[in-house]
Length: 420
Image (cartoon, rainbow, N blue to C red; front, side, top):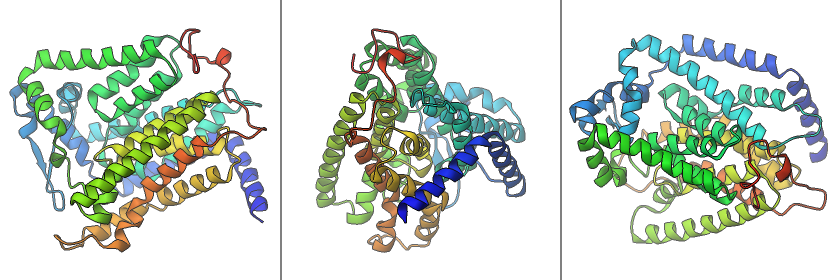
């Protein structure tokens, strides 16, 4: 029965792939209608726009957008270089800025899908473009993507920069610069450097460090006071970001805080869980590198970064899209674990489980123990990520073969290849 359902789903998938362009057009049209009829209030975009000019006057990290509980203040939490990048936003009328940001973010989603499929490597029968367009059409309705669009977040733009740099340029400077530039704007993309190290792209990794350092030094030269303040104290102050225990935070630290509280026992459990996840990452990287599975390496690295980060808001989890692409089309797509992980990602992101939990959480009376009925479902993204890491870590069966031979890697030079 399961095989029959899977066969029918594959048939539907093939039909949709053949009409990928139309699927994307319909998805975009429905998105536009939704935005026009139910306009959102992109608070994060307002923070970018209104905080950026303060970087020149010296009050960047004193600024905070006043909102409603449970997070009544939204301060600027990125490095000073990000504020310099956002400075032009203050010149645009608000309506024009929202439309432009939406358009750029949707275009970035397409770039993410195209580059993720490209990292899968050459496939028999081709269909790379159609598959990427179809995933872009579907990705528009995943909860992390919707949340990013609704809040005016920068996640999709930075994800596109990272993935484009890793999937398109042939030379090491181009591959490393994307990771370094994104990390200079927001610290979390720096985990992409692990991808370069795992795939033995030493020169690209050096270029990533150099790019991030150059951008940071540039900001330091322009706004030394704000740079000194951020890098000396604020960079480690997670309290400015928001409540770690909230279900909005889908990292392991957030999950443990909801399940066990924030006492010493919870801290010990957290460290044990982080150690276990690190072991899982090492196993996943070893398995993916051995089969020259570039997208598998990247998915493992990015999900690991989201898991171990102190704060991973649900909109940070846009990397669920490349993860789902790998689970659906990667070299281990036929394994039961891959199918289960893909199905769970689809259910929790399309059904918008986390926003429903957020709505329930906002009606809680604090302080007090976090209700178990909310705490356990609140681990959904972490659970999906762990299942995906386990799927990547599986050893290929006899019929499985590398998806990308080193000699055919379009973006590698001969001295910077997986497995070196």
